[in-house]
Length: 126
Image (cartoon, rainbow, N blue to C red; front, side, top):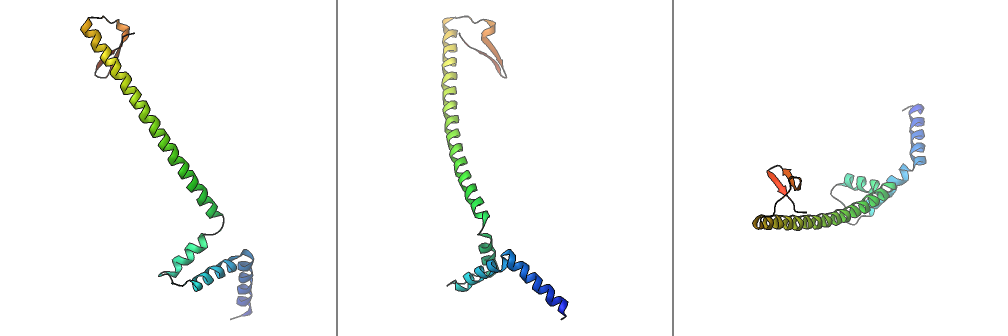
């Protein structure tokens, strides 16, 4: 090999060293070497441990916290939704019972007391 290739290699090595790549690789490789039970896939080990450091870990933690908060919000909104459905059904049941009672007592409805629905009319006593 010529001196041009050696010069390029040295320049590249300095670049990797300056960027911290050599230190990161060395730490991960030492970790793999010191691992009492060697993993079946050394490449996966390297990928996992190289990707586990740095700002991404903080991002993952922030996302985990956000997921937890959103799950709590979903639970709260689901409870609120169920309560509102129950109140709605109670109110509608009362209105229907009042409507049925007014039919048996002969109470008359004004036309503006009735609302056109998909399947007919719903009349409410005021």
